[in-house]
Image 1 (cartoon, rainbow, N blue to C red):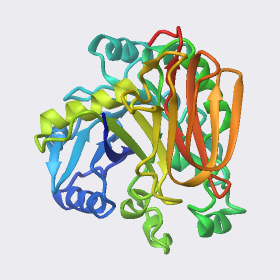
Image 2: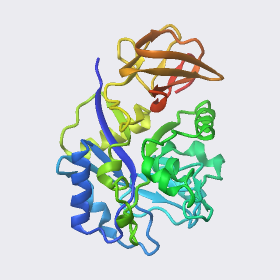
Image 3: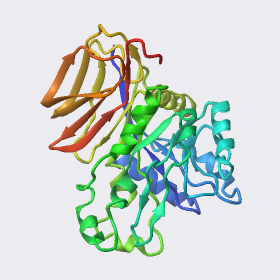
Image 4: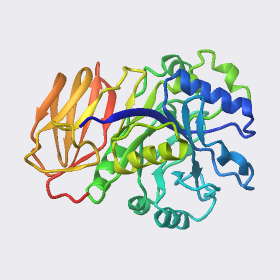
Length: 347
């Protein structure tokens, strides 16, 4: 068996006026970046404006658009990337939002769980504080492009940090990775990468002289690659369901494709019948397949195995429980798989 691989970006914000030209531009940027899909996530408007926003969903110029949302409880904290309804969802008590997410089986990720910065000299806090609710969500935004850059940037080093972007991306924080692994011991809990890209406004776009914070550039950086058994059909409703199901099952890895193209990465059984998100027995041979030679860390519960400069690796799992893979290319964070569930661990 072989899986079909499709790549896309999520946590994408839109221009407030949603003019047709803006949608056309963002789709063109996605197509030029060879994306197959995008999950759009504007903030919930306070007055429920833009009711026609959800009508943009579907194929446009060969790119599949999913009309999602970044919901919140009227706070800078505890934001959720949510997809699956055709009307605005947020600006309510978080417990109520999460209850609705569970009831409707929506795709939902906790956004930038450790997100804070002093980009403009003042502390901005967008962390997740209600961690007891995480088990009710699909998963976690493990790697945020915006906060990877912003969390280490302030007015004193902004020029240097800007000039080195995106080569200075450091990867997911240890605290978020540990949180991911802890929750994954309790339930299937999916990790993704998000851009949190906003249209540059108030003159900021004129300061972006390198054009590295435009959609056409950032769409080439952090991407999610889904593995699916069926091929996309070109029919919007069918293909949306295929993409959403892949995320819910955990058949996804995320990578910094600006560093090197991660297409072709595989983590699963040697016969490729099972992959990330699946349950396997302790006796099955596992395969890690890379598009380039790189350093690999196999992350078991409470143990990590290291392998240097490999292209392919076949091995038997040593410890039951959730197991995932991290790949470092030229000593920089590159690819992060979702978990395989080994042994008696319940999927």
